[in-house]
Length: 279
Ligand code: PAF
Image 1 (spheres, rainbow, N blue to C red):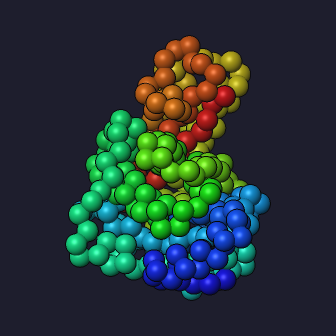
Image 2: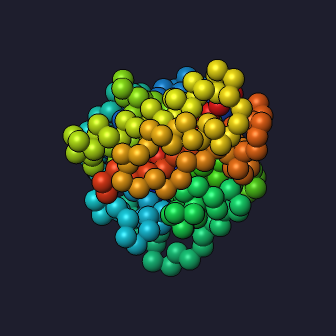
Image 3: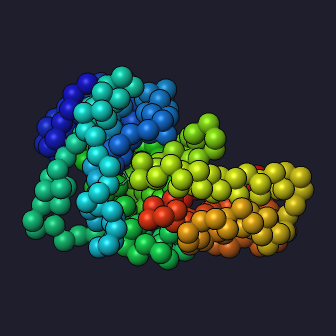
C-alpha cells in the first residue's frame, strides 16, 4: 500500500491505473476506522481493481461548537487496518492541501440537505458535498462507497454527483452493527460504559418499528410512536422521522413500498444517528 499526502502525487499514482483501464474504487473516511469502514473497503475490493481510501477529518463539515478538535484519530492503527484490508493507495492530506489559503468555493447542496440532520447541523452537508466533490475530482474514481448509517449523506452525495455529472457509481453499503445492535460509528468511542448501554435504545427502537412494519403496520404515526417508547432514556432526541428514501420528505400513511426510519439523539454529549429501511 502507498500512503500519499499530496494531490500531485496521488494523481500521478492513479494515472498509471487509468492507462491500463483499471477500475478505481474510492472509500472516503474521516479515519478512526471500524468494521463499517472495513465493509466499504471490502465492497470496493470486490468491485474494483484498485482501491483508494482517504482519511481526512474535514473541518468544513463541523459546526463551530462541534467536535472537530476532539474527533478521534489514530493514524497508525488506521494505516495498518487499510493495509490489511488490501487498500492500494491511502490518501491522507492535511487541511492545507485540501483547503489552501485562497480557497473560497463551496458546493451548496439543495433540498435533500435541509431536513433531518440538516435542520440540526447547518452547514454540515455543504462541507460534506464540498469535500466529496473535491475528492471525486482528485481521484476520478469509477465507484465510491458510503455507509447506510449516514443515510442523508448518501442521498446528498448521490444527488451532488448526478447534478455535477460525475461519472461515478455511488454505492451504499448496509450499516454494520455491534453484536448487540449499536450501529458502528467512530463517535461511539466518546460513550462512557453507562452511555454505551443507554445508546442501545436507538437500535432497539428502530428494530421494534421494523418488526411492527413486518407484522403489517403501515401507519407512520403508530410506527414512530412504537419506536419513540424506547427512546425515553436518551438525553435529547433530535428527530425520529419516517421519510421517503429518495426525497427525504415525511412519509405519508399508509406507507409505500420503501420508507426509512431515521433517528438522531444525544447520549450525554455524544450525538448518534441511525436508521432502518422499511421495505
Ligand atoms: O462519512 C464521513 O466519514 C464523512 O462525512 C466523509 C464522507 C468522509 C466526508 O468528509
